[in-house]
Length: 86
Length: 241
Image (cartoon, rainbow over all chains, first blue to last red; front, top):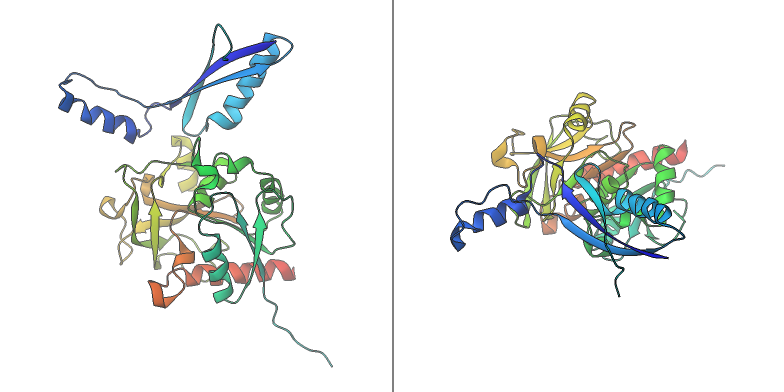
């Protein structure tokens, strides 16, 4: 069976996020003066062929932990998606 | 009758797809009297070298995170074993990022605080001579070496940083010409102005500045010379052991 996942990778709280800061700093220029706490992360979607969902989940978790995120600076979350990609 | 030959240490330089400074690193090694040995990221072979250099560049396009994919390259298995056996390993710029991603050095490197690519000469204060690249220097000494990076801000978790400082794992800090460290001379927002660190054993070192661009007096500062002289000496000591 094919299982689809999305992985969200975000910088750990408290770490400098210069990209988020730059976006935040540009917003007043667009007329948005009440925006704060802007952070930039990474979104990865992938399909995994596996006999069952437990196996697919274990794989996506290991992929997220070992490659998609760096535990020193990032957290990750794995989300299911309803249908696999084309 | 015995002939005494002065051995020339063999220093390997790994080329990844997207490496830029492998040629300069090989040239610096040869200039300083070593034998430069080209190594390939996809090989499981260090060709019997006495030290390994991971050069600067944009390995695998720096996709995902700088150094993330190279950190899992085939040859990293051999680098890990070599480092585990005490062999001298030096990561420069992207090579530093790769060693952090591979877990061989503590911490990580993220976008410069300024969000700008920085390319200029900087002064580094040497923090310890207990590494393969600072053996011929003394703590407190200052060397001038160029930087050129967009992702050179050194970060670590609070507990990591505490351990790094307590155990003396910082090798270089950005400073002024007199060795004074402060925010004014920090080019990228690195924690505690850290420009380079070592592992606990002391044989693996990474730094963002480029010593391989600073050995030829015709093209700039020569602050890279003592680093390569030290690396050659430690490689030779290891080769003879």
